[in-house]
Amino acid sequence: MEKSIEFEEALEDDDWGLIISNDGKLKGLFIPEGKDEDLVPQSILHICEKYFGVDVKDQSETIH
Image 1 (tube, rainbow, N blue to C red):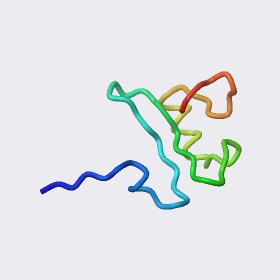
Image 2: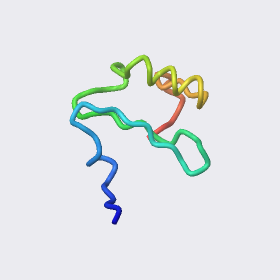
Image 3: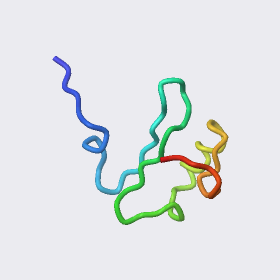
Image 4: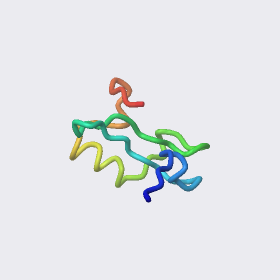
């Protein structure tokens, strides 16, 4: 029997997460409590820019 857990339950306190929609678009970036956009790891910035065309640090971009 499979057990489902909520997204946030799967993360440790300092984990970052990407939320991707059913059609493969970047829907959101989960930021751990106490962190902000200025501290996004370089690898996440690279993934967002290369695969989704999103600059996380660009204030005109909207992700949740």
